[in-house]
Length: 577
DNA sequence: CGGCATACG
DNA sequence: CGTAT
DNA sequence: GCCG
Image 1 (cartoon, chains in turn yellow, red, orange, brown):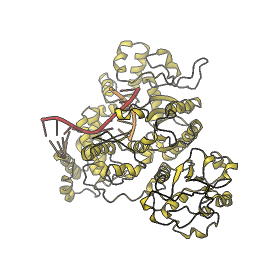
Image 2: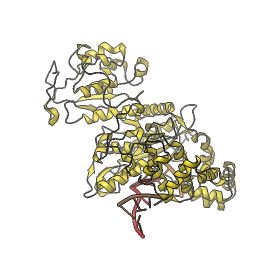
Image 3: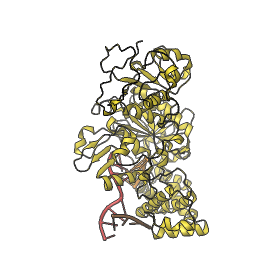
Image 4: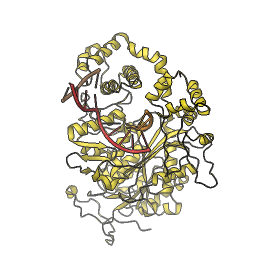
């Protein structure tokens, strides 16, 4: 019942000079330095909103005049933040009786409180009108006086929130002439997108033909053009010619494009049987460029050929199969009772209908085999609309909270960069309240995946990992990251690739940055860290090259700060074609 | 002329 | 060799 | 294929 009164004002913060405008009216003083516990209902929040809110709470968890902390359970919360506005919807996350005892506010309350530098009255931010009065009464700011004082600067929080379209201003020191993609603004679609798409064909061909270095050069050139802010014309050629990563070869490509509206080699490649076949084969999970070339060399041109190839080889031709199997991943993980691999003929039957628990053993989650990959292709090659990404995310968050309440999750990958259609769903899951070294982190991945499998939501497990730090100094954090690459399906839906990345608290923000992409953006982040800052950046974190010191960012912006980089919003990290 | 991101199964 | 960004 |  009693709303927690914050009584902390003895801040070490130097920026604390400003007297608090609004004193705790009823400072019962009994509460010693209690931080304001915030529970965030993730439902109906976009990945960016969740990330922003988390950043906000996290950033203001120490050393600020406002100090928040995340709480795993709504029961312990001093305030509940949600974008849900309907009772029914909220009841799926919070018991109604409990809800009546708490202030239930919109994310704007948090944002505006932070910009105002004080806890604002809740009245204007009640998430459910039905609970307006309770919210006002339980508000952690002064006691009541609902909306009167809210004349402050409430609206239009300066802080970023909302959908990816309403990003915060990109920082001023972005420079489209930089040789690092992480210093430039790369929109999803650029003004010279058609040229980019032509170069991307050549790039892809180089990759399929195992010319990685040439492919890399095209990646760099494409990245430069993606962030070049003007439409390319003859009179801009000089300028473009002086850009990093644009050399003689690229310039000649561009000139040809300006002259003819296309690039001949790109056309030729795109029309070639070989390119089309290789491209198609690599759509199969587990088939990369090398295997694709092998299949082509073996005479395959279409999926039917591949189907026949594997089908035949599985039934009858053991020898021929051995060759290709080398290129297809298959290893058993004991942890999770993976189904036996394709080498085990007996497992071939259970492809399509997974969740049939065997009587005596724990159910085994089917893993990837060439046969499975062929069966999954029809589903997995369909792209995923943003709405469904959110739906999948909601389900995962729901199940996650059943397995371990209080986890924080955010959608990363292409979705976060603003793509309207995604190839898969990438979710970074944090454990804000688990101790870094605690065992509670470990195994969360398998427990969640098992649960999803039992409920028929996960049909296959392509990959599962714990994390092993390469560095001795990180021995204590050897389980800082776990990955589960799954095939996920909503009831009656299309099967989708869903990647779950579990990050220990100290690795959370680097994991978010690392998994938001794009690929070229990430490579350049690492190059920048190494070449310009003597830092090492990987998904587990940032380390100082000299002494191996692990730097722990407290927000996504902090990652950029620590790297000495200006902020690049996720939607401007689309350095790839 | 060496290097090009980084790690894991 | 494959996977991920 | 381009950079330092």
